[in-house]
Image 1: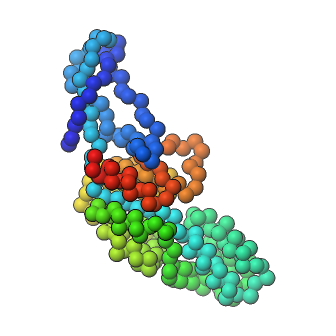
Image 2: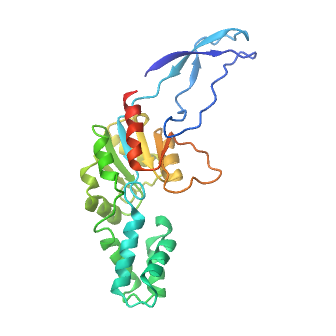
Image 3: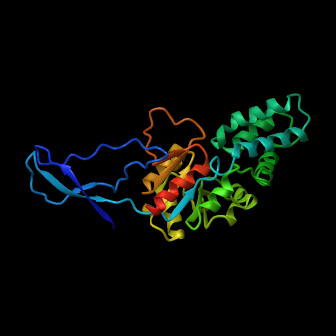
Length: 278
């Protein structure tokens, strides 16, 4: 464990006034739970004295964990392509644009259960398929050629030789297909799928299971993702630094407790490199 020396001015009650937390940005990480000021001499000090302290230094980064959907995988674009295929195979009175917009709106960026969404579509549109057939088609063909964000593959390559993993919520069938058909399995060291492990983000257990597979301590990991709850809060709860991918506005009233915020995956590289070498 590395420590660096510093000073803090004593208070009248003998305590130590700690520096206030800085607002995290893409260029500076927020205070970690372990980065605490510790007083060497427990004896109460006079107000005018100076107290020597030890400050725990941040640990160097050895691994980066990525969310999959809407972080590396442009899931909404893949769903849009599947919706266009459904429209092309059916004789519908509604235009392709309106049908696709309906699918995306009711999909709610993957938050709506698959069965509910496509059962609703099969009952409201003449798709020429039963609800079960539409659900099966979605699960087996929607991810034949997943659409990745343009900078996804190159970002993973540039982060080597750090260890890399994917941590994703979803069924084994769909998530494994996305990873394999996009080639992300060949660019990472481990893939944690909630449907396989029986664990879901933001449960710290799924992050710790990934760290075990990578043989790295959580304090030496960064979790990167677009979800404030699943990726930022989940990774932080597991003892990792976190980087938020700003694909959508940050929720009102929620503390901005990430260590870095970026607008695209490529911007993760310089931030992680600094943490890996400092």
